[in-house]
Length: 254
Ligand SMILES: [Zn+2]
Ligand SMILES: [Zn+2]
Image (cartoon, rainbow, N blue to C red):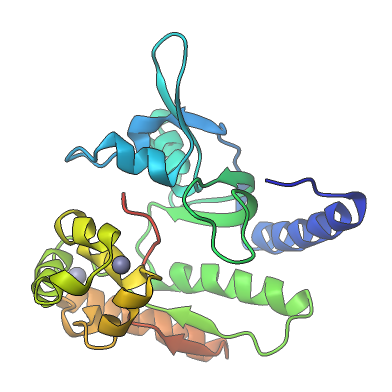
């Protein structure tokens, strides 16, 4: 964790302001959720062991015995807020933006801190591919307007509950054959969440990635059409993209 001194704090605000303006232009409203959430929010329904949670995030027990976690990202808290505040009865889609500090306890990757700032968008209650593309477009425009050159989007789809289970099985079968060569975490992930193995940064695991089965070959009809439509919207908006078959959310509980 670190201090953000005046010069950097000003730059940070400039970046956030740019992103906020674009988000508001596209009809997104601000939401602020607590920094602390019940740790159970991040436990998978099947019961993730608590040491996994504690390794990836800052978890603590209060004097009253509550098990809490410092929020590691924004989506889970917003999904909770959507449910608890009856937002599903609001006009859909509900389009939200958020910004603030997030916390991760696992070994930070290069250039990252354990407390970090993030700006994010959530669009809930609508399946329109145009809205998925709109989210990508907002971030693309924000980076471009901030002066970044040659920005390209890396994109993937992880399917849905129709087609993902079968893909996960194939992925697990593939990695089972390499079991002895995998890192300690991936040996566990093979059981819990094989898709997360695609995101592993350990050297022994990287070399098996290229040959791994790809979601794109396992899409159901609906996912195939949806993904294709998102890409067509990006084409239309002239946003350059690369298909990245290994792009998955970097959290075991997803
Ligand atoms: Zn690994
Ligand atoms: Zn599907």
